[in-house]
Image (cartoon, rainbow, N blue to C red):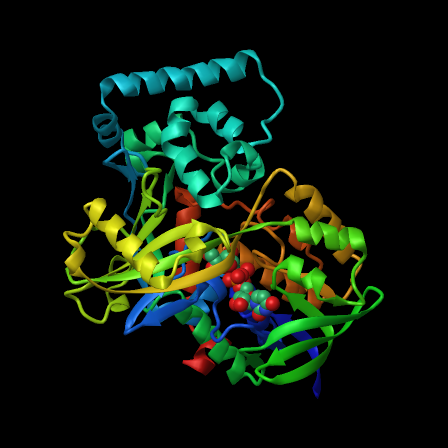
Length: 498
Ligand SMILES: O=c1ccn([C@@H]2O[C@H](COP(=O)(O)OP(=O)(O)O[C@H]3O[C@@H]([C@H](O)CO)[C@H](O)[C@H]3O)[C@@H](O)[C@H]2O)c(=O)[nH]1
């Protein structure tokens, strides 16, 4: 067995792990990064099929976190493009602009249903004013309180249930509080009427690496390696050896080789459940039980190559209608023209939310490509089946940590146990079982590295203390703009690499 010692060992080369590595090398520490997969970027990687590039989901680069914006600029400044945001919701045979536009919404819904929606909204408002109760703990009650039943049914229930595969009444309100708290009907109407005149508005343009999000992480890997640190791919952690509450080493499989890596400090972005289950000697039974009880939602994407140049103008479309299994459709050339090798063709990402082992997950690739092809034609987004030339399937395990009724207490048990380990920090989406976006995952990686350098940050507060929402005030927007102009100046690291 091969054995080595490193001052810092990082598990996972997704956005969180690589950000930790990047910060450490900037400060002169050379960590080793171990990645189970064959490429870097985690869920933010870019896959390629016959020259067509696609995301696992869609990855916009926008953030309110100055430090993250700075890292993006340092790594990729010249290779970002500005992409206009356009997305719509498909429901009941109609397309709704998103964010909602008053005229489009009213004309799609019709006057009478719109009046019913308004009354149901007012009913919810009157109820919460006259009979204020405790904050609802499930998503259904949370959304009805804020939007009224009818709006909830059209714009939240069906899509949310597709994403999570469980009824909205079984999803904790924490999820909504983290993702959609800032929205209200009143605000949607003000936005629709006054657009950018409104104090806060959703971003209309976002940054995107010209070759997809994976480009950011491949470049980050290059920078880390150019400074003498190592990113080892195809390296799956199989055991984490501990002495009490001190991690001593990690055993990993690299093809048919087994390696053991000793370290002083460990940072892990692997799923927190797997981390706990790989501890040796094993964690206490109550911690293992908690780990077995946390759940994930999986995801699969069917990339369809269509022999038509322009199918629709959106970056992506949400498919709320329950009669379609597809949840969201990405049109990658509308993110960056360089994502498709032939401008006369289109590559769509048909996204299906599912759970490993369920009927969708178990379909063969051919069946999935047939299903996606049929659905895209029935949605009138592609003209005919014969226009679909080819397809490719990617299955992504553990795409989303599930916030069901019990997750909090299970996570608490694991968190309390892991907090006793002085040389281990968990970061990132699955590393903390928190539905982070890329920027918040990166921030946990950045702060973990800073902790190693002597600062003291509580990673479990990230995303609860820093705002998630993608609406920006004019002040926030102009401060980030100023900052990114400053950051276009080469820094020590980016000038070395470029
Ligand atoms: O045993 C294991 C298990 C996993 N890995 C690798 O760890 C990487 C984790 O990356 P990722 O799942 O992408 O998670 P991370 O928190 O670093 O990144 C976040 O970014 C966004 C995302 O891009 C959506 O916007 C999201 O918040 C998080 O995904 C991955 O490469 C695994 O293969 C391992 O090495 N060993």
